[in-house]
Image 1 (spheres, one colour):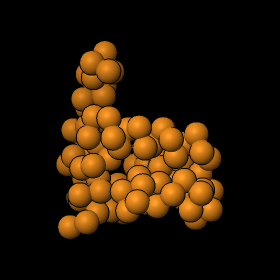
Image 2 (image 1 turned 120 degrees about the vertical axis):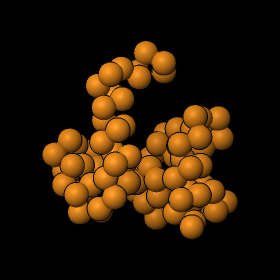
Image 3 (image 1 turned 90 degrees about the vertical axis):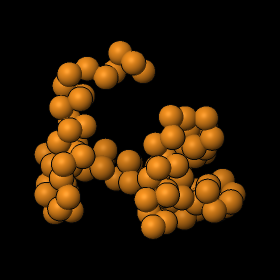
Image 4 (image 1 turned 45 degrees about the horizontal axis):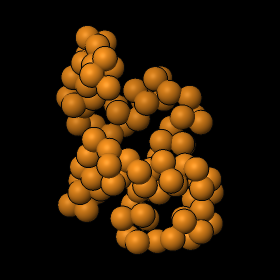
Length: 94
């Protein structure tokens, strides 16, 4: 993933880290992503939250509509990923 950290990605990270207003951040998300991408990303975070709570794949699929493949991918990232989901879940818990 090191090749993903381009100057453009770094600029995006700088912008995202500086925005502290939810409405401004939402406006940026609306401009950057499609409605589908926003929904899918928020669904993945919900899946991560439910996995962290110990919910079964069947329960998560029923509650979120996420596919088993998506749930498995999120589970793998939650367990072996870069730590982004863990940081997000810890932030939500505060």
